[in-house]
Amino acid sequence: MDLLLQAWGGGCYLFNKIFFALAEGRPAASKRTLRCIGWGLYIVGVPAWVIILAGKHNWIAAAIEAGGIPAMFLGLHNAWYGAKASNRTLDRFAATTTYAALLLGVAYSLYEYGGLTTLTQLLEVGVMIGFLIGSYLLARKNIYGWLFFVLMNGSMATRMLLQHKPLLTLQQLVSLGFVLYGFTIALKTSKRS
Image (tube, rainbow, N blue to C red; front, side, top):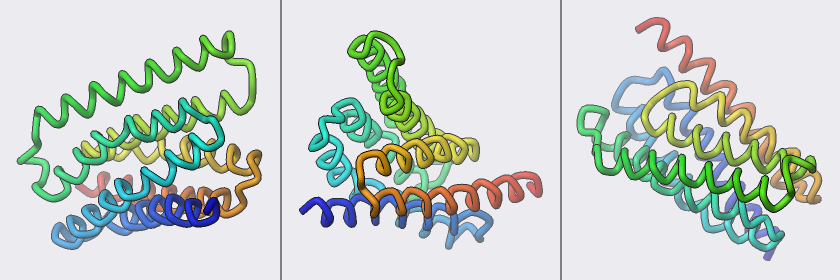
């Protein structure tokens, strides 16, 4: 079962990054399609990650994964309808849940551990910040969300390695490559605009 969850969650998140990266620098129609597929895969992968993280008693990370869902739906909405049709209510809800989850997650972690005291806690905070802020910024089509994904993928790869999850470790490292590619293309494209 554990291997199935790793393949499901890791696969969806990996292909999400691949579709996001491939969307950068493409014509509007194909960019829209690739981003919609990417956001859809992101949403579909959440349950597996929550189960994996909760199963290892990583309650903060599991809650953070679930807390990122509004930003994912904002990203799907913006990809489908375009930036001009942005839903202000959904945007505000996504921003509120993103920053509330981040604040509560970090505060609870610091309270539970009496400060920042372990490597796994530091990695968990890195995943939390990278995932929530990166998802929200990319949902708003801000290219610097990619940099937060670098933090997320690097932290999660290290965490999965320490927890003896080789498939998820590899998936995170491959995702990191696509994240760096996506950021590079997005940066080049934004300089041309």
